[in-house]
Length: 65
Image (cartoon, rainbow, N blue to C red; front, side, top):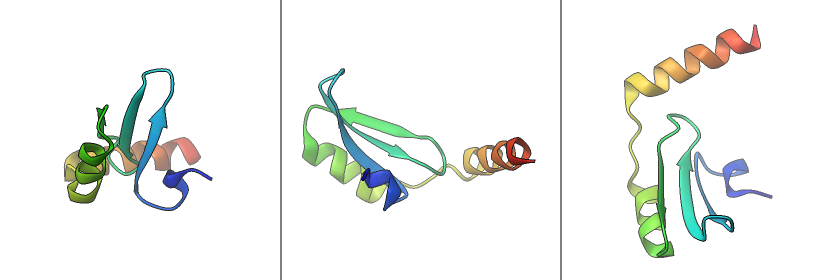
């Protein structure tokens, strides 16, 4: 199971890049670092850009229709 299945901002190890990656499902913002603590901190304090989240939600609704 992926952390993205549980939390809005998921954190995983990207083996290809050799980096820890956090990504927000709502606004698609992301952060990568070789230090897991930095990525966890970013994930814990991330705030979505409301305009980007609204645009992505609109595109997702249109795609589903």
